[in-house]
Amino acid sequence: MEKAGRSKVWFTDMRAPLGTSLLDKQAKLIKEAGIASIDFKNKYVAIKMHFGEKGNLAFLRPNFAKTVVDIVKSLGGRPFLTDCSTLYPGARTNALEHLSVALENGFSPLSTGCNVIIADGLKGNNETLVPVQGAYVKDAKIGRAIMDADIFLSLSHFKGHELTGFGGAIKNIGMGCASRAGKMDQHSAGKPTVYQESCIGCGTCIKNCAQGAITITNKKATINHSKCVGCGRCICVCPTNATRADYDASHVDLSCRMAEYALAVLKGRPHFHVSVIMDVSPYCDCHVENDAPIIPDVGMFASFDPVAMDKACIDAVNRQAANAGCILDERERSHHDHFTDVHPTTDWRTCLEHAEKIGIGTSSYELITMK
Image (cartoon, rainbow, N blue to C red; front, side, top):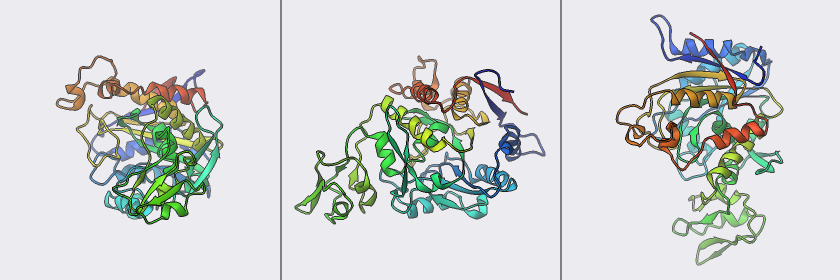
């Protein structure tokens, strides 16, 4: 029985005595947390995780994904690993390059036991509009394959983030499941802009603009913001990534929109969540590099409540001493909070408070430690 008003979060540390392994502990944790209470029989199961950017080495190894996949298959489910393409220019802006990065980082049917599907399609514009009617988001733009699934699971690498303070389950779900236009909806309070030095004047954006907001002059495209509705289609189809969103949303706005996007993904279907606190880089796995971990490895968490699990992870991180020589060790630790010390302009509480307010979960939890 759950204590009144508190969600259960299961935890196990990273100690693996001789004859056991961390993957054994991960499987036991997930089963003890009650994943079998979900009816997986012949159901499509989206397992949302981050495959790492090209050059980044802090992302979760494929082995952690295979443990989840094997459990789902043993319960009769039909799992697939998934993520959506990125908004910013990089190695994961379309499905082909994203899949190549996933393969390079070790995510294949052989290593994970299932296929990888980029949920928002070839160009990042295959999305489902999910009504939210929230204070910040009316309709969330979610990768179609994620919304087509019957059951949703998240597998998150818990780390720092330069815009939201930390990246855990809510960010993995809310930001990670958004299509490219959905990511723009969260990151930008304005409209996209064409960076002239990258534009080749091909006209692809014009063909995909339903508002007639784009014109080409002297072989360069420009966007009339008075006509633009911010749909983000021009970002998705630009072959040179010349059309980009301005990252001008406030941290409060971004955090609250991210929570409402997470609600769009989770509402109305079974869901379950796992987070791993190891290699806690100060920045997102979307970076092509990963800075030194700010704390020692802590362990693995599982819960039906992503808000409670994120809060349990935050508390666990803050109980750790800073690693010598990392960015946290170099900062004046005056906030009594590791992620705020690393990113002083952020406030991770905003996202969890809004997530709790809109009914995703509760930040009040009962931690159940498993050996």
